[in-house]
Structures are given as C-alpha cells and as structure tokens.
Image (cartoon, rainbow, N blue to C red):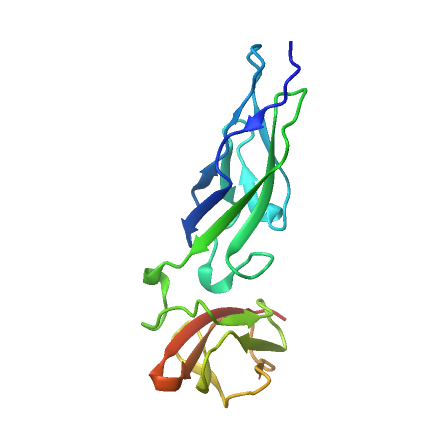
Length: 194
C-alpha cells in the first residue's frame, strides 16, 4: 500500500566555490512504504529556484549556470541562494524542504591581483545607465572602471551618493576597482547591458 509521503533526509544547507558546474547537493528522501516506489525530485519554488536543475530520480541539485562570486546572481545579491524541493513517490509528495546554497569566493579567480570585494555591493548588476557602489567602509580615494583587457576605461571621483555613470560605454563585462584608506584595494565585477 502506498499511503506514506516521502520524507527528505538530506541537509538543508550547502556551500560551493564559484564557477562550480557540478552537483551542489544530492537530495535524498526516505519512504516508509514497502512497495518499492521510485522517488522523484522536483524544484517547487524558492527565491532562486529558477537558477537550479535537479535530477528527477538522482536528486542531484546543480546550478543551471556556474555561479560567479563577483557578480552574484542570487535574488538577494549576497551569494546565498534559496531553493525549495520536494520528493514524490508518484502518489504522495513530501513537505517542501528549503535549501540554502552559499557560493564562496575562489581567490584564483580574483582579477588584477586584487582580492574580490566581498563587502562591496554593485547594483544594479547587470547595469545600463549607472551603477551604485555600497558596502565600502572608510573613504574612497578612487573608483576606476576597467575593461577585460585590463585597461582603464573610465575613472571617477568619489561620489557621496555612491552613484557612478555608465553612459557611452559598450555592453560587456567590466571590473570596478576601488582604492581607499590605507591603500586598501578591492575589485568587483559588473556587467553592462543596454
């Protein structure tokens, strides 16, 4: 008799380094029924549910596109992704489990020999006419937009509003290089789209 819903037994958190396209977490479930049903997994929602795939029978949770720490794609723009999954035996469905996936920085992916700016927030990202720069502690002495070839394309004086203009620039990936008190340097990645 198939009268019990599966229960998800795997963990609710996972951590993965940026640029990882492999399995983030394998969702597993137990079913008290003794009839040998195949358990099937499904993404049901979550703020970032559309960023993931799940193996229907394997439960392997993967990013659709490898995450980039410097250009967070999470709904809250913090490199913490939230997805909800369920397990079904074909008749009964489990309670949805919320899984939180944290993407960590890969220092080998840092650019220009400068650590990525974990506390620096660039938004909107992707951006079109302008971007805002927040999360900087201390006074900035300079902000520079650098192209992928490593050449500066625009330098900005410090803006108290945190707003920086992108008009006249082509679409593409750029790096925002900041320099502040005591020579502290950081780099963030931003995508410009028209």
